[in-house]
Image (cartoon, rainbow, N blue to C red; front, side):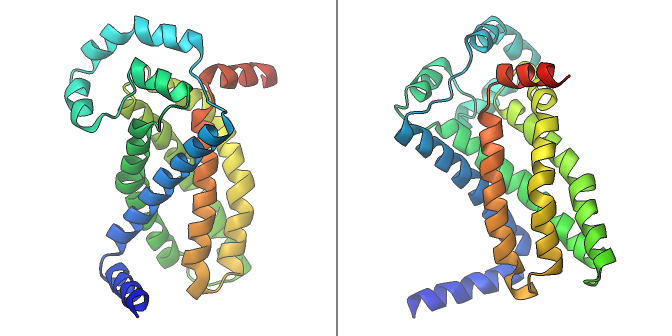
Length: 237
């Protein structure tokens, strides 16, 4: 009875405040996916260490970061969003979770991804009505080729801002193409099934599971060192 009452209250809340609920759901997805990645690395002892060249660059540009981003010190102190050297060494040795990273994903999921996706899918369903093959394909390609590219850009740049990086565009430049190709391989078949086959009553559950799986992929891509991405880009260029 207690569980049924809680579920009923959640349903009422979702109907009254869909933006809030969706934002919290996506915030949980992003935070939970990163938590799962860190837990996996801790259990199986596969730390993703920062390359030495990137560490040297970070130390050499520390003063420049403070001068170019004067607000960053005030912003990061209460939230502890950027990693200091002590926390980075601790993470590399799997001594503790990277809580600053988890906070960054929570902020991105709740305040950026959640509201954007809520508004986008609300507009998409209102603008493209019906379940004909033409409507399904229009929604599919609009979702993948209109929304996804800028959303990937916003993801990498916003995370770099919260990480207090000197160059907030470098990670986006190195990882955008591979992330977008991976997104196409994942979301095109998933969304085709969603728009054409999944009943309306099960669509939210289906998208939620699919989104959580995608966020795990995104978290993994985010953890890949820039040096590896640059080497791959040079190989295929």
